[in-house]
Each structure stands twice: as C-alpha cells, then as structure tokens.
Length: 242
Image 1 (cartoon, rainbow, N blue to C red):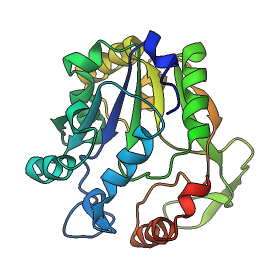
Image 2 (tube, rainbow, N blue to C red):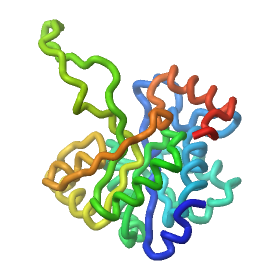
Image 3 (tube, rainbow, N blue to C red):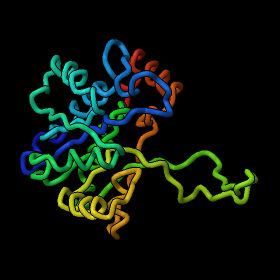
Image 4 (tube, rainbow, N blue to C red):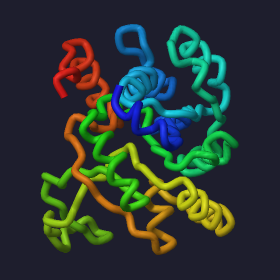
C-alpha cells in the first residue's frame, strides 16, 4: 500500500462526498448508490482509494434516509471499522463541513476530499497530491480543457471564443492542510457563502491553491452515458491498467 510508512509520521484523513441527490442524472436513487457488478458506485470509489493510501480517519457523507443503505454495504468490507458515517447537508460544501467537524477529522494534519462518483483516481495522482500538499497546503488535480469554449449573451448568440491555454477541468481528490481548511470553512459558514468545490472556499479567502496534472481516467460520473462508460471500464478491468 502506498504511503503506509510516510503516513506513520502524520495523520491524513479522507472524506468521501456521497451526500448528493444527483438531480442531473435522473435516476430514482442517487447515482453513487447505483450498482456495477452488484456493488454500489461509492464502494468502488472507496475500495480503490483505500487500496492506495492508509487514510485515518475515513468519513463518508450520505444523504438523509440512506444511513442504513450505506452502512449495510460497508458491513462486508475489510475497512468498515475505520469508516465514519456523517449525514450530509443541503449543499455539497455543507456536507463536507459536517465531515470536517468530526472530532477525529479535526485532529488530522491533512485531509483529502474526494467525490464518491470518481471511482478511477490513480496512484500517481494520489502520490503527487500527498507530496505537493506538504509544500503548498492546498492542492487540486486538473486536466486541460480540450473543447472549444465560448461565451454567449442572453439571446443565445456567441459573444467570444475563450483561449483554452489557461482553462482546466478540476478534479478530486482535493488535498488541504486541515487547519487551513477549517479556518476558511468557518468563515464561509459564518458569511453563508455558497461554493461548488472545496478549493473555492480556500480561494475566496485569499489562500493560494496549487494545480497539479490530473488523469483523464479520473472522470466524474454525472450523466447516464458516464455511468455506462464506468460500467464498461469496471467490467473489462481497464481501470487496473492505470
């Protein structure tokens, strides 16, 4: 397992953000609980990332009414004793704030926050994040935008084509020095500001966030097409090549 010896000298926590309801996906149950080979998606994600790093503690957020569902699937895993379950809030950042406030998480040196619907994060990305967060305190992976990006006006006409040179699609895990993350989150909660990712909370209060190169395989399952691609990758074992 990666980092076992390294993390003996510090505490590194993991938050798996699994409290979303997946409105864009359009299924009856949240997409992180849809099964591939009889295993829910969030568990594929969790097993993959814990197979690389010895995180302690591990917090999984869940939507209201899904506690029994999530805990039931964890019962058959080898790591069930180290996983803490925390009910999520109305927004993603509020769910993560609930997880960060857990007493065990607040005692860590660093914390990684990962989407439950990104099951294919690679060892290379994890190692790079761990190395860089000790230098920069806040680090996120990203891949360059490959599509042409344009802005439009209210009438739907194109106004401008934006250069892709400095545009990146941000991924998770996002890694932070715990004290820095808690400080920024406290301010955000007090001011009732809304953020779409954890790095945004850090950025808002003037802290610099370092970008590192991510991996294309570490895509987020947002649509039904994404889910079918993930299903194919798992069934064919393609993810093991990365």
